[in-house]
Structures are given as C-alpha cells and as structure tokens.
Length: 476
Image (cartoon, rainbow, N blue to C red; front, side, top):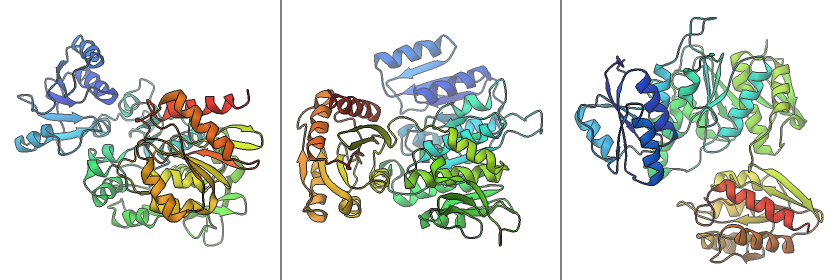
C-alpha cells in the first residue's frame, strides 16, 4: 500500500455526502489539492459545494464518472459501487482507491501513553452493528476509557483519529462498503455478528458480500469473535489471516464452551478470558442488564462483552456498561401498552434478517410489515414466524410479496391490507387502527416491516415516529 506525501498531492474525493465532505476537509488541511466529484446537481449539493470551495476545494457536480486530470489517489464515500465509471477509469490509470476508513487508518496518531495509535475494536454484520458498537462504547466508558462509537455511526472515524484530545480506544462500526475500500485495516479485535443477503446489487453476489465482511478479521491481534448460531461467521474466521496468538471466540445464547461467551440460567458468562478456562468461567452480568432483553439483543451484548474483554476490561465494567446503555430509537422500543396490548417500534428492521430477530422475541404478535423489498424474498421469514402470528397488517409497495408468502406458509393467519395508495401520517394511522382491532389483551403489535420505508415515508425514523404517534392516539 502506497504511503503518500500529502502536500500538493492531487486527490479526488468521490461523493459530496457527510463522509465525502469530511474527507475533503481533512485532505485540504493536510495540504492536498482536492477535487470533489458528484453526479448530482441539486440545490443542497450546490450549497455544500460552495462551503468547500471557500476552503480551496474544487467541486465538480453533475459528472461523477470521469477521472479529473492528474489524480493520484481517490478517496470514496462508502456507497459508490466498485463498478462506478470513475473507478473503472481509475483502475485503467493505475490510481488507488481508498475509503474514508482507509484514510483514517493511515492518519492515526500515536498515543502519548503508549507510543502506538489507539486500538480499534471493530464490529460488522448484516444486523445489530449499531447497537453492539454502542454497547461496546458504553462498556469501555464504564471501564474509565476515553472512547467513542465511530465509523458507520456517531462520530466520523476521520474526526475520531484526528481529535485534539486523543481517544484511548475506539469502538468502530464498519459496513461492508467501508470494509471493501479498507485494505490496510488491522483491528485489535473484531466481530462479524451475522450474515444474511443484503446489498447484493452493490457487491454482485453473496460470496463477494461475505468476503468483504470477512476483511474485518484480517490482521486481528487478540480475538476474532464469531456467532455460534451463524456458521458463516465462523467460516470467515477460519479463512482469516491473523496475527500469531489471535484466538477465535464464539458467542451464543446457550451454555458456553471453551473460549466462548454464553448464557447460564439468566447470567451472562465469559469462558474465554479467564484463568484456567477448562474449569472456570466469569459472570459478566445478567440478561436483565441488557436493554431490551430480547434474544438477539442479548447476543449483541455478548459480542460487545467479548470485544471488551479481549481488550482487557474487567467484569464489573461489562456489567455497568450494559446497565448504562440505552438503545437508539426505533430498535425494538416499547412505545406503550394500550388496553393490555404492547406496541413495539422496530422500524429499523428494514430487512428480513432483522425482522426475524424481532418476531422471535414476542408471542403472540400482530405483525405490521411491508414497504420496499429491495429484492428480498419472504418465504423463510414467514415460515419461521407463522406459529407466533395472531394476525398481519400489510402496507407498502411490495406488500404482495409478503401476502403471497403468508398464503403459502400461514394460510390461517388473518391478513389485512391497509393504507392502499396512502403515505405518511394518514397511512400509519390507518395501519395502527387496523392492528389494534386485531389484537387481544396480552398480544404484541410489532412494527418490524422487513422492508425499506421510502415508498411511504421519508426514512425508517419517520416511519417509527408516526407509528408511535398513532399508538398514542389510540389512548384518546
């Protein structure tokens, strides 16, 4: 991997989003000659471009495909796919392509206390990344470390490595896109939480998607953490080229074996980072310390604990950090109990894998589902959830795909199609009222759409907010 002298270096930044703007500012501060390219040309982009131009950055809108003359390096925003015309032109010209994570890795600074850069504890997976990395940051904070959840969440990874007051250790969430463009990354320890088909249009195949996720294990020093319930994650560990002495550490909801984290009765248990693990284990908390204590969230907590323990955090800090953690909105969040029915907002469940985890946490369920399927199929999801379903309320553009799967695998479950042709608050109000009619005292009405939201709502956040508002209206 080339090491660059930044002063005067012609660098092209691909994309005028948050990460592109951050990269452009950092590179300009380093003395590089920066050009930002973006295929769009809207009012918002022009405003961002004007801000960068005042800093001496060149911006080219409406043309994201041709390579600016003289470019020696491209730094790309995560969403740009590998087959973009700009990257094909770069490959032909022999120009390297880095992501913002790769740039951040090269710009790390040594800590005064150790003389080495702050270690990275890295998290990826199809679902659960943000929750896990935030749990990890909470644990590290409880251990007295200056830390942050960074990367694909919270603080920009570039801002973190260049912070005026350095961090002791970073909890880094990484998407498959970011990992694809980060060939030099070598975390202290890392986890792949799970693997399910996602972003296949970007990666080209499930094999390519999994391979990019597996990059997170490359060069790990202490622990490669994997999911005992997902053999594909262990397979990635087996294929990884790691530092000598790095260990494979499993996590799961059963009683832990050697070098594993698990659950015994209601206790969270470490049987990996303890003396004489053949005979001993350490209690690191309880299921009740996890908020919320749904099974997949307990698994997230175990993964976070494994990374923290690999870094050397004591058991008390694990417990205290889990107790202090509060999840972001729209992640299996209880909205209210109305007439004995519990209403749960998991609008963040935008794919079938995430929805399956939510559906496994409750029973019986009136399920609210539908939206943009993004090429997903619903056979396996519906087949697994069918015994738990009281009824289903469908909405959105691709509701028909879920309806067909329900007809095949849950033919006796009542299905209502709501909000046909409607969007926003009007649509969600109708959806919630239909769900309330179907629910009985003791049931859970679960918004876990298994689909993206943009056909009816601005984003999953608005979808969840409108769900909560419609639930509160039931009280009136």
